[in-house]
Image 1 (tube, rainbow, N blue to C red):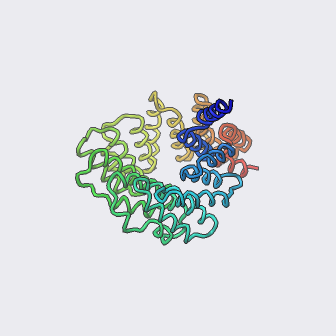
Image 2 (cartoon, rainbow, N blue to C red):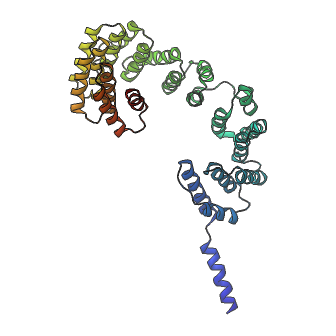
Image 3 (cartoon, one colour):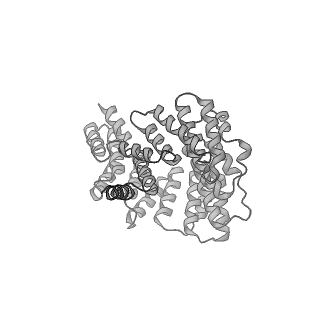
Length: 365
């Protein structure tokens, strides 16, 4: 009987206890949930930590959840991070978590030193560390503590294409522009040139973006998508002649829209009106045709005509927030306060966090 009981107990343990892979998968799922702002199963995380006391990955996951809990439990997060540091000298996530916790608790110098340790361990995951450094650093000196400049090197085309948008997201346009300017165009592939153009445009390096797109057009003069992107950049720069040259013989919706914008820049309202009418006749123009027609009339000093055009557009697309909000603005401008309030309220019913509509309603009270 004793042997049978012992055997049954062993089988229950073997088949009832989750495997390491199952524990890690479940812990990772809980981390993903809290990252999305969803509730997590704290007891499940604690059980996984008790079953796997020597697993650094599970320790870091528990620390991350403690950090993001409401309210955050920084002490528990630090305990988990310290345990992960002891368990694994190679795991990048442990010093990354500890550094972030120290910075949040005001121990900034030590925190960025931990991020430097994470950078040295990161290998092919340095982009993750870079994102954290950019988000947390208040001064260039703090950032350089974690990521020494001499280790950044000169980015290649692909790396620059990834790095520049991240720098912009973290509000570092100067560094993003520096990255874009460092790119060498020699022998760049088509894919690389498109990457440069996208990164340069987002980094505020319109001249670099135009150079990349011009290089693409020299190789493929009939590439419609590249022509439109280049024309758009020339329109943004106010370079009408260059934009018109690129748009020559193009009759698509976007090409007409760019010509309309050029006409408005020149305050040539007759030409802008003609382009707007042509836009309305195109089957795929949608709400933007009515929006731009209204902008032409409003720009030419005819807000009531613009309101009428927006009404025609809304008759076809009654749920379009952009058309309705612009009409609310124009209604307010001409003194139709009640109508403006109704339109702004309708916008907020569709998009409760629409800041423009919120501000307009507040202004009209």
